[in-house]
Image 1 (cartoon, rainbow, N blue to C red):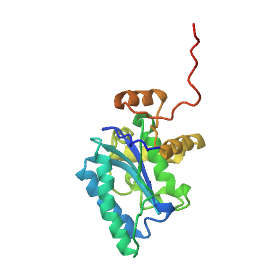
Image 2 (image 1 turned 45 degrees about the vertical axis):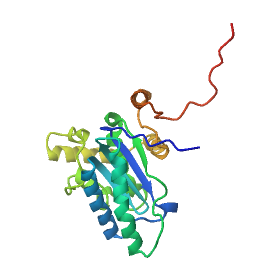
Image 3 (image 1 turned 120 degrees about the horizontal axis):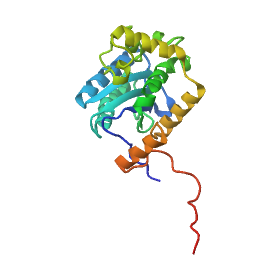
Image 4 (image 1 turned 30 degrees about the vertical axis):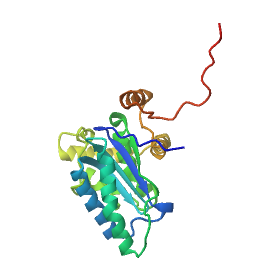
Length: 231
C-alpha cells in the first residue's frame, strides 16, 4: 500500500523525527553535531521554518518546528541532508544512505501539547541514559530554555514566552516544568502519535485538521461500518 504524503500544515507546530538507517549512529563526535546544527540553522532561515526545540541523539534527530508553507519542512530537511550526508560519508569512509527512510512529521495541538513535547524532547538524553540531567547534555535546546546559554537556532514559541514577562521568569518557569516530570501515560501518548505520524491533539483538533486539509489526521476507526436495516 502506498504511503500517505506527510500532513504538513502551515503555521502549525510539528514534531519531526528522523532515524539512522538500521538505527546506526548518525553523529559520532562533537564536530558532527555542530555541523548538523549549523546547516539546520541556515536551512531554517532559508526556508522560513521556525525551530522551537530540538535534541540530537547519536542515532536520531528530533525537532519542534513551525513552517510558513506546506513545502518548507520538506525543503529544509532535504537541504540539510544534501550537505550533512556527504560530509558524514566522506569523514567515515562510507557510502550509501544514512537515514532510515523519510523523516516523520506530526502536527501537534500546540495549545495543549507544545510544552509537553518540548519537555519530553529535552528529557530524551536522560531517558536514554546519555546524561544524568538535561543540563548536562550539550546537543539539545534545554540550555536555551533554561537560561544557561542562548541558542541562535531557536525561535521562541509564544507559549514559551507566556511562561513569564521577563527572560528570568520564563527560564525559571520552564525549569520548574522540567522538574515536575511527565507521567507514563503522557509519554506513551506522545510516543504513539510521533511514531505513527498522526496528529497529536483532541478528537476535535484532529477533526478540524481533517476538515481543513481534506486528509485523515488520525487512525481509521476499527470495525465494520454499522449495517443499515432494510425497510
